[in-house]
Image (tube, rainbow, N blue to C red; front, top):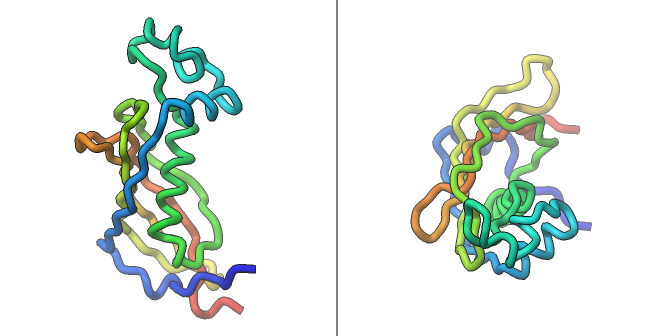
Length: 152
């Protein structure tokens, strides 16, 4: 069993920014994910996708979110999250294409202690997934509950 993450709500700061390592996405990965989870033709069929508005297969939104999650764990897994409770202003801004290289950026935009007296606080983090051209692929605000030191 992995140890609990060490950073608690009290350790977080508004404005804190983190940047993930790079990750390159292949056509084979896009097609494999699509065949299993989102088999729309422009995600799963490279030949047919040539006739789409994208001109090639592109990653589904669900796949883009899974890639973001993987990269987020690389930069924020030291935070002792209770759970995520929602996303605001969720936008898929650019297609994620085969051989794109992306990274995630996170910036804490607000912190609010629990009003109920529970040993947690709410952290709102703005995220972007950015490709090698500097284009934003995904952006949103993530609302998460984070344990405080008072957690029993």
